[in-house]
Amino acid sequence: MLSLQLPSAPAGILSVLAIGAHPDDIEIGSGGTLLSLAASQPDLRLRYVVLTGTANRQLEARNAAHAFLPEADITLDLLDLPEGHLPSVWGEVKGALESVRQSCSPDLILAPSAADAHQDHRTIGEIIPTVFRDQLCLSYEIPKWDGDIPRPAVYFPMPVHIARRKVELLNKCFPSQQGRDWWDDEVFLGLARLRGMECRAFYAEAFTCTKLVVTAPLSGLQLG
Image (cartoon, rainbow, N blue to C red):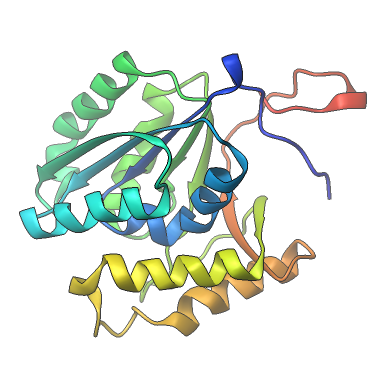
């Protein structure tokens, strides 16, 4: 198991593009990673894109972005494409992501996986590689009824306090989801504990990655 660092960002400012089909996707899949980046990167620039959501859910997403990354420079794109029907508006999803690409060049992308069983997540995951060809893209996982948890290859360890803070903020920022049978502290922490065990940490978030290019000498590996 190799430990690699994120690529160095120009001017020391790390630019992250976080994409979700629905409000709460980004935080469920990568909230701990965002909290950790916020704690370690004093100059963090976040582009936050959510493609579906009612006005109330968009407000939750806005509040969550600022709660998870209170000191970051955040740009939010909150769209209202039809939830549950993104495959039927494929062209609009593609156009929205193309528009984002034209206005930013992130160092890191956090997005859904093309192997996700949810049709909205999967649509975004399939389009991402056709739009962003020169960025490191990590595809997060979202536990769900479908039982589509992948076999990940990339892990981001989380200290205990980060994992618990993630769950605390999920509950605080997304009250509309309380009471759903899948919205449960043990689900979120249980998956994090499993992923932590897999990378010799206590808690972790896990990602899949379609393609990496190693550009630095073996004496100082970086991801490019």
